[in-house]
Image 1 (tube, helix red, strand yellow):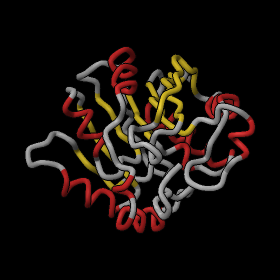
Image 2 (image 1 turned 45 degrees about the vertical axis):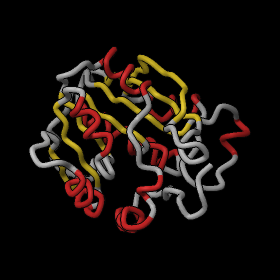
Image 3 (image 1 turned 90 degrees about the horizontal axis):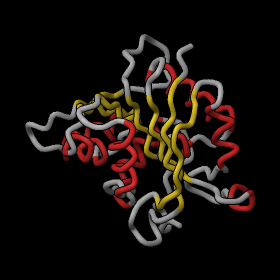
Length: 212
């Protein structure tokens, strides 16, 4: 689905992602398709305060800010944040931080947390649950997690793990998030708009954190 050499790593290793952002990440970087704007407008309209987790080059964060959201964008790759800041016009309201949301330490919860393409870099069920738990801490009780990630539309698709994102079925996704979240909305649409690069099926979901 991606050009040779442009596959994002299926990894939660910051050094590996630093290398990716120095080499091939720009090939699949693009603004989100309209479905994400529709979901946010329905469930978390501006000027909601949003944390863009795994923000990469900052493209989605700037897209959010242009729509009136109060955006903080974080990534555990220092190289990504450096490049995101370089690409962001002076005077932009987006705040950038080098942060690993799965790490220890105090958390200032956000009412809305966006993950566009982070959960699907988790290659195992254990890592997906670890990330879901981190999202629960990050958005706090009653908060929203807006997720965009690779969707396997059949068990056969889920078994095809030749490279790039981890393709998961809806059942696998719901199992990973169930201890902390209720799924409020779930839609299937293309992840992006580049033919043969990002136009693969993605899951767009809005989840609410429980009060416990």
